[in-house]
Image (cartoon, rainbow, N blue to C red; front, side, top):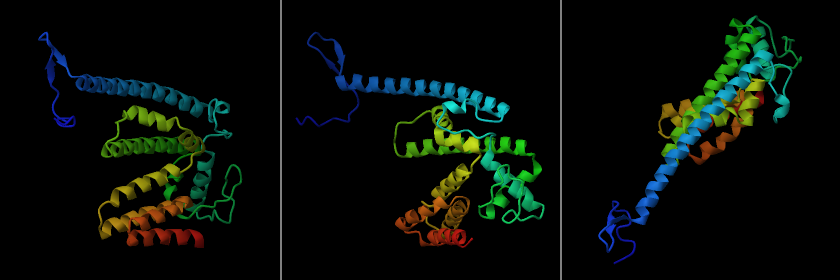
Length: 260
């Protein structure tokens, strides 16, 4: 009898010469692995909840102080105030809505920096005119947190589709929020997470081939390029996927950035 025959059959028991039932070794190993996975998942979930509580405490303290609490102990060089990069978009959008030209006029940036982003940023941050600077920073930090949670959920779904070991959602969210890129994003008030949301939406549209999906996916990627020019490299992926319509829209966004 081949030693490979019956490898995937249901667990059975074998009788010893004394008549006692004995579980086959592979079955006990399988059950032990399942138990280990469950205990590991539970431990990671608990660790994630603890990290989320600590992260919430850290950012609450930072908001009260208006700068990154204990920032000197991190890899992040803290600015004088929270959301210093966000404030560039905030004051530029408010200046534009009042009829000014933030590209050629001073618009109140705390560091007197010029506005160098595409005009679409003025539209995306048009909501800032309804809030004070401090209120807008808090709203944007909350939005970045929500986008991080969405990214964690999508990460879990992709891991499940790839048949990878499922990580507890609290642990994934905590791992992202406590990572250096996300902490820097929130401390500065950048908009890279907004680019990530557009990439996730485009990725969800691309698997099904249709004119509508190609137009929407290409539009999302073009908007991502207008926000952050590094998204232009994704055009290579569209070429590899043989999606010329989406690639043309993406290329149009890249050309618009270059011409601007």
